[in-house]
Image 1 (cartoon, one colour):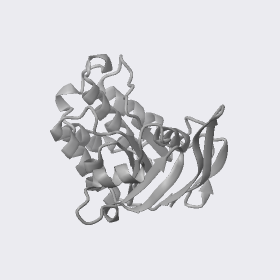
Image 2 (cartoon, helix red, strand yellow; image 1 turned 180 degrees about the vertical axis):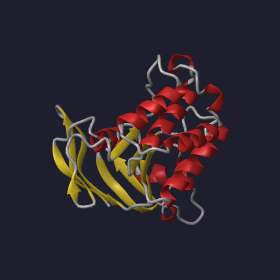
Image 3 (tube, helix red, strand yellow; image 1 turned 90 degrees about the horizontal axis):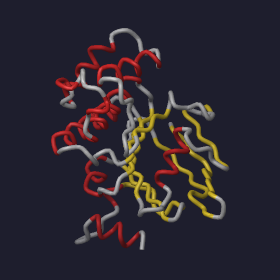
Length: 231
């Protein structure tokens, strides 16, 4: 269980996130939703240790996680930054070796290259890849490392329809294997298709936490619900 309690972050006089609390169970997919400036990205950055919260606790299976928690919580950001001089395959090797992944990871890596249509690009350096290919490379390298909690920030942006379908299938498979998945997105249809729950933020505060399918009322689509809740 991922347990977050009273997470708070201020930037001078601006409250980015305030007293945010929630739990996510293994195998659950949680969509983090909200308008621009709601605090979604700041929440993700605090969870993975890239931004230090002003207050709050983050624990995994009852153990408090300190600032160096990247082995437990991994973030795949909206704008993928990869090494310009490393090939696709070298990124995966780097991830596997730096995280001490047990022997045998190569077969899984090859499977990921095939699934994300990266096989023909395995020897291409990062500087020569499109944004979508960079994102796929980063996702594959992260999955090889095997963290129990994965944060996807706008994962569908930059992927073609085939890549989006493959990513949905990968996320569903990771959920079935017991991973905790959090997805921050503005694409409400993707959130509805991917998620078990929705956590909606507005101005840094939680305004909804529950079944994403229970949001829509009779004759009301998810977009209308979202606009009504965040109005």
